[in-house]
Amino acid sequence: MLKWEQNVRKVVPYVPGEQPNEPGMIKLNTNENPYPPAPGVERALRELSADRLRLYPDPTASVLVQALADRNGVKPEQVFVGVGSDDVLAMAFLTFFNSGKPIFFPDITYSFYDVWADLFRIPYACQPLDENFQIRREDYFRENGGIVLANPNAPTGVAESLDGIRQILDQNPDVIVIVDEAYIDFGGTSALPLIPEYDNLLVVQTFSKSRSMAGMRIGAAFGQLKLIRYLNDVKYSFNSYTMDLTALTLGAEAVKDEAYFQETTAKIIATRERVKGELQKLGFRFPDSQSNFIFVTHPDLEARELFEALRERRIYVRYFPKPRIDNYLRISIGTDAEMDALLAFLREYTGKRG
Image (cartoon, rainbow, N blue to C red; front, side, top):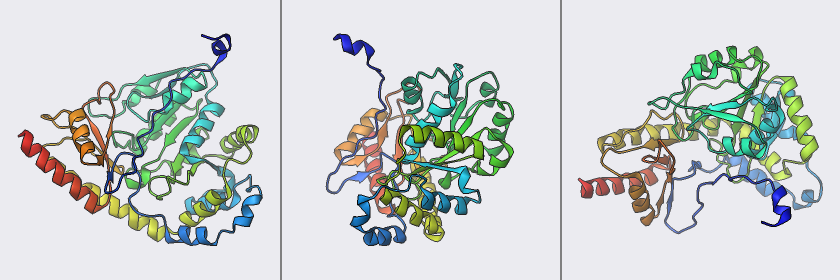
């Protein structure tokens, strides 16, 4: 090892889902929305003048912040935005988890949490989900340095009730509790209504799933004024211009079209429920997903083999070679046509194996 390497901050990085680009592929591995963004987004993109790009964007992100505040019934000072919810969450870890006590999150959850904890030298302790992939609330009722819960959880799709979130908040008044709601628009109940009651609650959401804008990288956090002020202090000390002009303009347009948002999320939910029924007929088992994916296993099939067989047919799903979930596949919900193609393959595959 070279001498300078001794001072390098070394971490095991997060591994994102692969991004293949093949003709005729069916991409169900990264929970992207199969439908395009709201029509106003495309219109605003066409109208955006290239000349404006020579100027810095608004560091306060006011056009997007105001749109989110209006839509969610909060003050603009209660909204924080960033480059995807990953950026928002990383900023929250950096800002709030500095007590030296371990933060808590589930052992099976979004695998970026432990990466940020390692990167920022935050101690953490993973709390095991039960045999049904549910959190055990009592595990979060003891001393800690903060709590992070994805709701609905990823990659399981299981949603915690609002009553459960409230119980955890009641037991942890002295630390920040982050509820990561990347998938909340597909099921479950948002914790946003709890914000007036709890000064330590931060709710994080994203445009990547329900708003069909994964390629734009837009995330947001909601909380009481003091929480958001602390986040902004850290942001302005790190990078004053986190959001570019295009993201601000198009993000605001996406928020304005509530009818389109409701239409597309309803279509995904309907497809998800239909596919659940068909998968059950094929012998697959899965938690009751409230997200835009299904986390499946089969008593007679090896998940890695099925993953590779799907890949050969250019049907991409996600496989996690991790303890407790290494015989599961996470299948994103695509269009009805895409899901029908997946089901046709699975009928053929299970028939061959049966």
